[in-house]
Image (cartoon, rainbow, N blue to C red; front, side, top):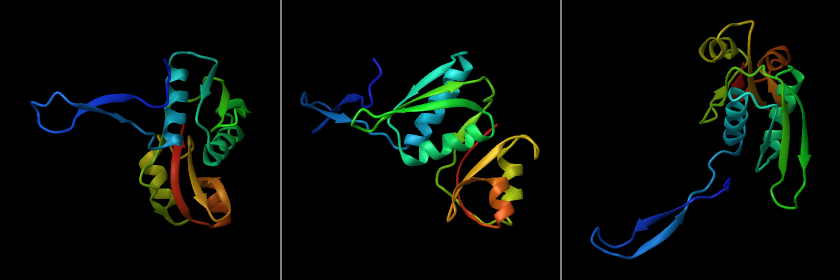
Length: 154
């Protein structure tokens, strides 16, 4: 029963009132939902996971994960709505997450964030959104660009 919105009855007037209205929960972060679904599927030993909805940021984040070998390949399915992605997992994701709010990060602060988010300096990736596009922390340091922290994976 996988739906994108859940409905809960909420009391409108007073606690003794019998009138209820339905309030719909909305998605706060599409990227967070994507990474959480991938992490949960990975923990359960699944080989692929269906993710919806999709945004450009999600696609770029998955491309960075694919470049570093944490996922195999993914296929975008256009359903004339918000789209779907089928991600082929390879069992390398130990943890992934979104950093919210998207903190500002200069290229000199990268080392602090690596120590804060990743288990080791040699292991894991922080993903940044910069003026040069969505990059990993090593490429941003090489290009000497800062940006905002999107998330991490290792």
